[in-house]
Image (cartoon, rainbow, N blue to C red; front, top):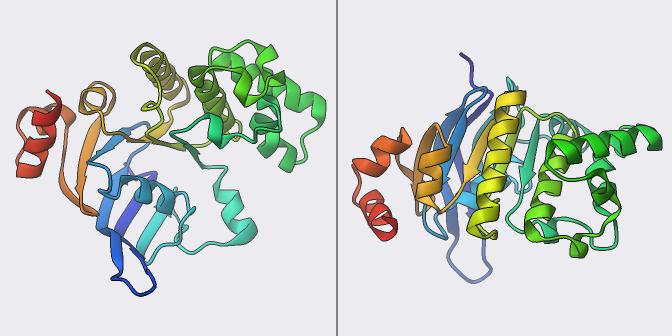
Length: 252
């Protein structure tokens, strides 16, 4: 089976005036297969979120290659890059901050459809359908981000990601700002959507127990590098690297 996403020797160096350069991501390679959930774990500063921003092209790559659905997207710009967002979407850690506070949730969810020239009536119908798929009543489309809970806002953010029928969704700490009960509901939602739509996820998370429960494979990052990779049960129960052992011991 061909991977839906392939990351080859990815590198990101941040240049700071008068200071040493920082290699936030250093020679990272991995594959994501259709219908797979790949977890990325590591401490804060390990490079997890930078990898997410590089894959979704929110940050430019210093070196390496990103191949999405057979297309090299590493250096795409402008309208060609925008087209790739029909295949890959991101769900962020702070759901409320990811929406424009002056616009309704429905506006945010339907924006990608509006950009495609879809009519207002069709957008409202599609947004209502997406909200229902994500466990929210259609009237939520007329609410503003500050008028809903964090969990409801994250469901709306997932609905927004689904609007373009992507093949890959990057979840960057998408559940970490939620309490445990809401977190479970969002994970259940992601699982149902993944099964019904054969989505592939890159699930960036610092919660090893959650990764063990939710992901098919996991990679462990430290100082911008991948130090271990495997099936979550194996990596967590029999870690090979000292760093992974330390991570596991700090949680379990």
